[in-house]
Length: 444
Image 1 (cartoon, helix red, strand yellow):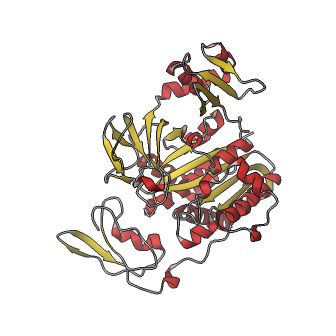
Image 2 (image 1 turned 45 degrees about the horizontal axis):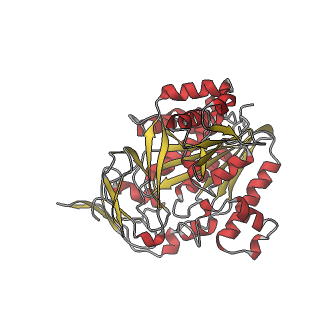
Image 3 (image 1 turned 60 degrees about the horizontal axis):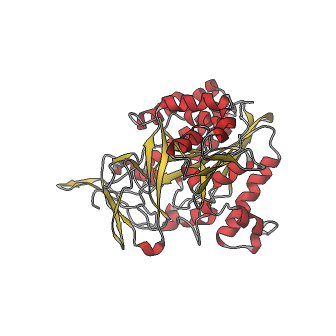
């Protein structure tokens, strides 16, 4: 149907046209069923029909909250992998299940523990992004405090999901024998190469760079109530991994690759064992090949927030890493054309009904500046930032600075970013920038 494959739902018969991005011949494997017709062709392309069968036969059994757990009893890091924090992104849960199938069959030596969790379980089992509201915007301190002590069975919707998932996370953290690392698996509504999202600390950067995909700085800090924010506030390593388009078969493969590489980079699994049981070199090559030619690091420059009554609609043809010039018409809403606020790369254009982020604009960060940033932070030069014009310490805090934007211009803010102060909030002409807690290194 058109240039993009029809969204795949296992409870209906669909006809899709083959594209280079998602060949029809792989759709049956992606859905986990071989109930497909013989491909036919005409002048418009290759078509393949999924035969109408009882949807209950095609749907997988309901997912559990705990997708798996593996440990050999040797002390070490705790890795918590979450999939499906949005219910229309099931590939993360599928990748986690595949990982545990291999671990349980091969039983390799292992330091620490890996725990796999379903995110928004009710939404996942219904195939919907969320029930009442976005679970990945619900991890706010005030909401968590209001639900403290509540029993899941007394709650509904995302409140129940929040309490159940949060309870599993806290229980795992309470029994850990080493540092903790979270890997939150996602997909997007548009075509995309894989990339990682991290809070800007040296440990987060190092572990994200081990995945061999571009890393995006500043995005997580611009969104309130995300699971990654919650984990960062607890003082643990947190990495978001965006694998590709929701229904693309390669998204599961990329997420599984990210899981294996993370287990090796944090010291849970040896490189040799991962190569033996999971063909680690091929998985690493898969991610490297899918990001060939892309920047190694990017930083957020603009988030285009939207509301339901905006009537926002992206123009067709955009995808992640799409080069964009300032003023390009990228969407339209009830006010008319929506133009790019600045040049750079367009990220996560919204091609689904639900969501409050229309798109993001990012720019490339040269590797030289990443190296400079790492060196300056090691020297603790952030202690000198209050000496800059218009920059003041916040009394009683070592993780925050207040900038007077009438004095401290772009240069001062860039220096703050370089030294790890990224989260921003405005108070009139004053700008508060904060630095996340430095997480413990899982290798220690």
